Amino acid sequence: MTTNASQQPAKGAFSDYPQLLAGTHWIDHLLDGTAVLIRPLRAEDREREEEFIRRLSPAARRYRFLGSFREASPALVDQLMEVDFPRRVAFVALLHDNGKLREIGVSRFAAATDEKQCECAVTVADEWQHRGLGVLLMRHLIDVARSNGYKRMVSLDDASNQPMRELAAFLGFRREPVPDDPARVMHILEL
Image (cartoon, rainbow, N blue to C red; front, side, top):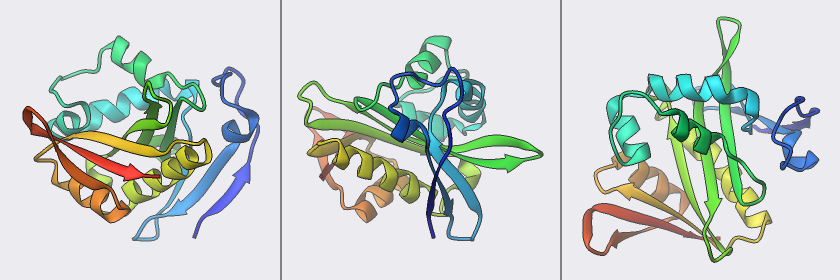
């Protein structure tokens, strides 16, 4: 069950988000019934994003960023926090943890140079995987990409990333090898 409600964007939120998207949020339920808040990423989420990345396992960080590191650099966090609707969109999944909102997942896309294609990524905290959160985050992302005229969504992934392989197949993405790079695959969804 999903409900859609509006709220005013916080002062200082990304000014490029139109009022419609900035005020949008969904209360979705995971497969186990846990309620999560999904909404567009906001400027005030920076510390949550840093903590989210810090809490990911080394394997999850490697799968998401196609490389290894201990701590996200300020430049990487700057890049992740950059949104510019409709070219760069990000949704976060949040829940209450000891009286504070904690990020447990994020999905995002960025427009490719041809303006008809966008590249996407989704990351779910290790302890929240296999509960349907990746599907929920991606469905919201796919809906927004379609409504903004994108014709294709792609994801470049590590070929050994089994969770992404399963998620992509479930959502209808086709899988193709990356020429000259057997360690990578491309998941492609015609929108």
